[in-house]
Image (cartoon, rainbow, N blue to C red):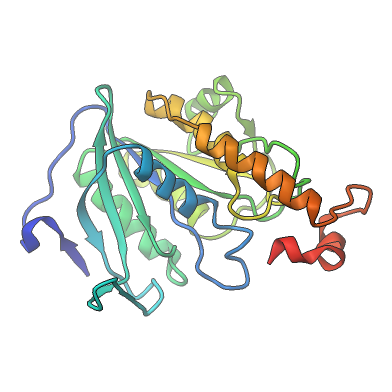
Length: 261
């Protein structure tokens, strides 16, 4: 079910003409994975805290968790995902964010998002997420941005931005499937991801992702708040007794697991 959110009226969506780019920044709400894989939700929140975005369209779907959001005044809002617009003087930036990525019907949900993106003029889409099949990194390591594109020109563009290209591996779930479907709608799809290992709130991961994303957006994003958070998180991890000589994170999580809860 679609709902146009301006003045609660059902009207035709606006078409954006200033080289519009869609940022798909949704994370899983599955309790089993939410701590390791919340980077996209955090990135969307950070962008909204630093830039002026106006919400203009919402999507409610049975692919999303059956939930409501109870607001501070005791009223409720049906949980969905929302499209926001920001113009930075160079590009129309469309941000898709919300409480969860789809938990079922990822292909159908991707088609709904992309068909709407095509209607409003989007030709470039960037999907944000964490990589699912990687070896975990040290929580003190600055993550590399890893990605792929829906076509070879997009791959070359990512290379110029310093992105490490994913090759010969499987990629799972919505953040990846939506990139695979983008070309059906004449949209070039990009995926930007990081390896997991850094505990939430993932400031180093956001710094890495935003450094690349800001170049695609053609807009500088202020990162000092994240840099301060990364420094504080390092102190907390060290004070919790983290030992970098203990091997692989899978084992370390059991031995030193408090910082990962």
